[in-house]
Length: 238
Ligand code: FE
Image 1 (cartoon, rainbow, N blue to C red):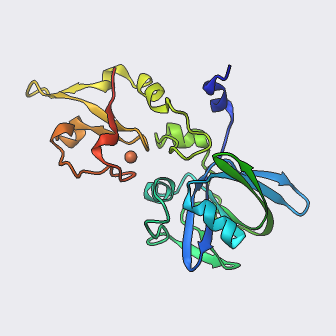
Image 2: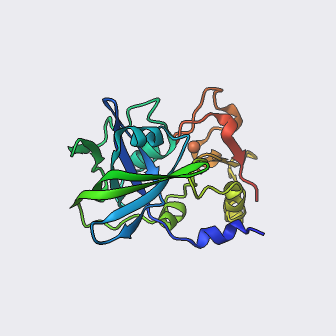
């Protein structure tokens, strides 16, 4: 028997892996980075095969890892975490440098690592990429962001392609909602305000704050955090 809650006891950080695909800068958020050796340092991480960045790393055989700090702007982490580089230039309006030919995100980062790809391990839905470090640089002394911080402070959930994605993440999180917070009543009327959660990124639409009922939002309304449509929202129950 596999209890998915056990996987929540594994601690992770958050990183952006970036590379070049032809002339395009591409990248995505990862959380499974680890240092494998210290002498001639080697690191590894996994990426879903459906991610455009996976294909790009295999093609370029080089990549950079930026270590995300707690100071990162939310729009940067959500842009890299919930969109595909196939559809957009994620580096637009984001601070980055070119190092050893690789685009390296520096916006809200602690440091970065540049690597040559030395091995790819096929793990079914994901590949493990193993890289030999060729360059590293410290950018700031800001605290590195942990996965727990991402969940508990930023209140975001793992996207579907994440290796640590858990199908019922959203349901469990709903149960943890503060009951008194789950619904608010406007003192001037009988309007009952509800909250709706984006099942993709965890964004909460709070009718009490927005003063617009979720049902009254236009059909083409999009999640302000990850850009998906209304159909990806579920009501937060008590
Ligand atoms: Fe969302």
